[in-house]
Image 1 (tube, rainbow, N blue to C red):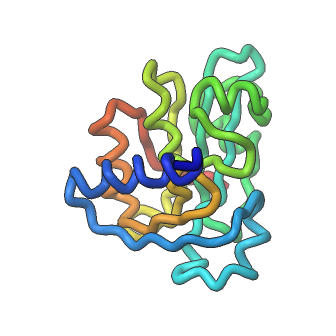
Image 2: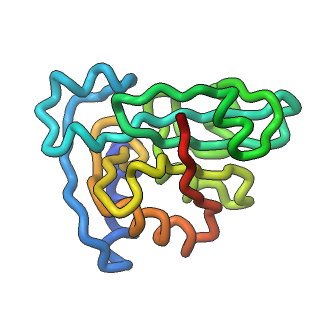
Length: 166
């Protein structure tokens, strides 16, 4: 089985095991949120834009999922969560902590962070509604209730919180 397909199947198996309701859609690979317009997604307005960030000391890592039309003000976000200066984490850090490659960032990657070094922040605008995230590969998107996603990740030991992310 191809690596991406195995990642997708692993996520779907975990969701099925927990009897979580979801919708899944396969699509061509997308590396950036602006590419989704061409995909005919079933819920494009809730397809999360994901960022993998680190502090300036390389000690704290953050996976941030925001509404697709939003931009993150890193200074405001840093203040909101009480972090040091933030910047984008490297591809090497992404592989190390999330077992993902650039273009495939998703909160589901936190399941690969066995030492729970990454803090996941979901945009508070997702709270109580639908969120679309990659299934650990950028060729499939899974839609589920954001609160269910938060509880699902937390059950596996992931640190998840909502933030106002401006």
